[in-house]
Figure 1 (tube, helix red, strand yellow):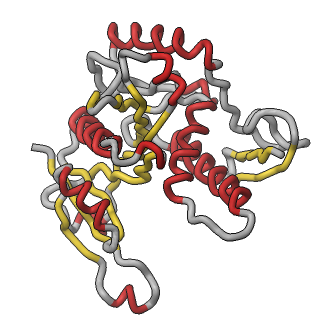
Figure 2 (figure 1 turned 90 degrees about the vertical axis):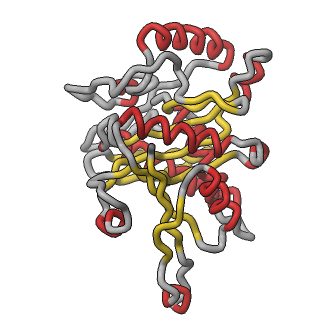
Figure 3 (figure 1 turned 60 degrees about the horizontal axis):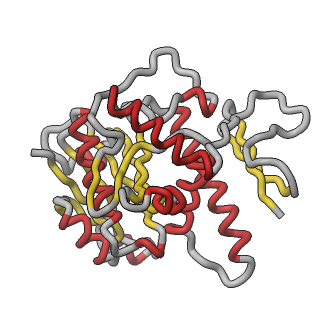
Length: 284
């Protein structure tokens, strides 16, 4: 049994349906009064290597950093969409055997992003865990589509990490995405009051790595790509939040150059809420 998600882009609503055939997000419900968000299928596995080689040739001529594929592939028509900057390679960074780039706006890759983030943040339940995981993954996908449609390309980016093992390109292609992170331009006053001399900042969130690839420096590569994107977009400050009791994550961010600038007050713990730590990194 498959779960299908329909998204009303006018009313920002998502609907789940159960069916045994068809492709997710490929159909609208009967008698739909509004246009529906449609995603284009990604290349089949056998075609992926040719697709990647062709895309890399294009990147070396002109570079990144708009979107990895045209916005119209997901029905996002923008009249004045333009590239933000140009770099020599498809990837923002290549470190530790991983390459980090902007997500391609095609169905297969967007679903892969939703799967990685859902695996990272889903809280298991005793009964019907698989079913609730699919629900959660559908919510993540709906949120991703909403952010893409409603954010200019220089205000939001979903970065993805994949293997760049030159010795086994076919295996690297089959491995797919191993980690993701969201980067959004924000001006939240609750954050700005703890930062010095900035009107906007890049907010890093949703960083997730597949379980079998953790402790292999994927997250470190993702954070380095966020730094590179901040430079390309002309921002000096990045910010993120982490739970106070998550010492492993705090150490990861500290090693990447983030410093603690604020901790939620103690009284939040008295009402059952987990305290968060606000961390900031400044580009030199």
